[in-house]
Image 1 (cartoon, rainbow, N blue to C red):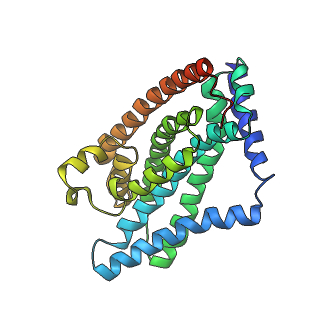
Image 2: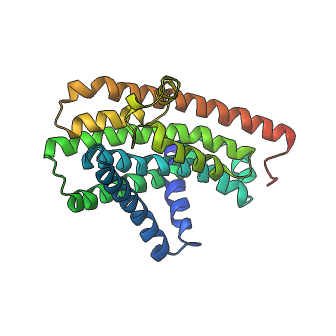
Length: 262
C-alpha cells in the first residue's frame, strides 16, 4: 500500500511537471481556461437567441463538460502518451500497481479540469448575471466531484485502448463531442428519442448534470441523492470495466509484442 501511494503521488506529480517541458504555460493556461468559458457563453447566448432554456441551464451543463473532457483526455494521455514516448514497455515491465501507476498520471489533469470548471463557472456567472447561494454552490461542488469520478472511470476504459490503438485522442474527441448532446448538457433529455435516452442513462455525467441542476436550483441533497448515487454507480461500473480492459489488453499486448509499436 505504501509503494502504491508513493507511485500514485510522486509519479503523478512528476508526470504533470513533465508536461511543461514541451508546452509553454503561456499557451497551456489560456487554452485550458479560455476554452470552457467561451463554450459556456456560446451556448448560453445561443439559447437566449433561440429563446430556449435559461442561462443557468447552459451554465451548469457546460461547466460540467469541462470536467468530463479532462477526465477522458487525462486517462487517455496517461497511457497513450507513454506509448508514444516509447516508455510504456518500461513502465509495464515494472511490478508497480497498474491502477496507481496510471491514475497517478491522470488525476492531476482531472483536478486541473475541476479547477478549470470552477473558474469558467465563476467568470460566466458574473457575465451572465447568475447568482447562487452558498448551499447551491456546495451542492454543485459535490455533484462535480461525483461526476469527475465517473468521467475518470470512463476515461480509464478509453485509456486502456491506448495499449493497442494509435490515437486515444480520436476516441476522446468523438465521445466528448457526442456528450454535448447525449449528456443533457445542452439539450433536455426528455427532448431526445427514447433510444438515445437509453444510451444517455448509461453514460457518465448524465445523472451528475441532472443532480447539479437540482442542487444549483436550491433543492436539498435528499432530492438529488438518487441521481448522485446513480452517477457513482455508473462510475463504479466503468472503473471495474476499465481495470479489466487494462489487464486484458496488457496481456494481449505482451503476447503479440504490440506494446512497443506505434
